[in-house]
Image (cartoon, rainbow, N blue to C red; front, side, top):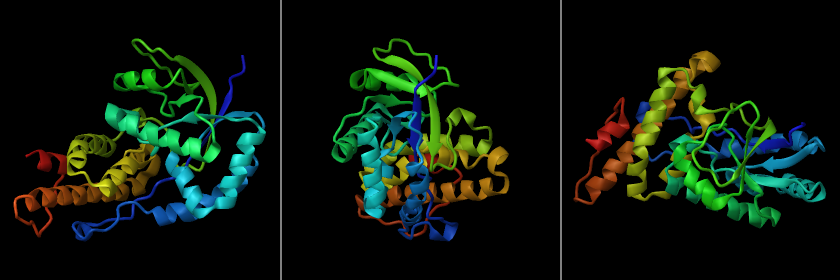
Length: 283
């Protein structure tokens, strides 16, 4: 039996690039300018989408980039969806990894995704797309509440305790993303360290209440962002990317510490560079 074809349209996220001397200088973490300038590269690919494509997945941040940088391309995409009656599937707004999100974070990102989907395409999502092919038990209750169908790539296997939704395999084609996959593909200590740091620093970011810092975390928890620290796939570039991720995490930790100290009438001028920013905050 032939599976329904699903097209995933992404846009690789990039760090602004941060060395140890940039920590504490209030530099932006994510290079949205570069991402915006590259979004038009999708035009040729989108215009040649197969008529076999029946389902479309576009994370909210990609739709936002299209709105801000290429109205014509967005209009052609809207026309394509309407003309071919393509169904839309939901994903976390920032395409953050399911394994790194709390239930509250996942609910927030799904809500943001549904709002932008409704506003741009004037239609609701027809189900949820599990891009990583893995559904952690922690997300099951959130999906049960929001969707009746969950789609996943045909080469992955999903096991759950008590889903109330229907699990459906699909053929997947990807555009615009440099590296897609599950964090289960991580095979280096650098990737593992980033996963632990991102997971453990999240509660501190939430407690600080800074929207920009939370947005940085959301982009940094994309599987593609973490997997770029994998030596087997990115060789010499992996270490440089890992160090930029760690410098960014140290910058976030410095900001969090300064906010906490400011509440006590204190200020820390010199950033502390730690191999584990989340442990530094915990202590």
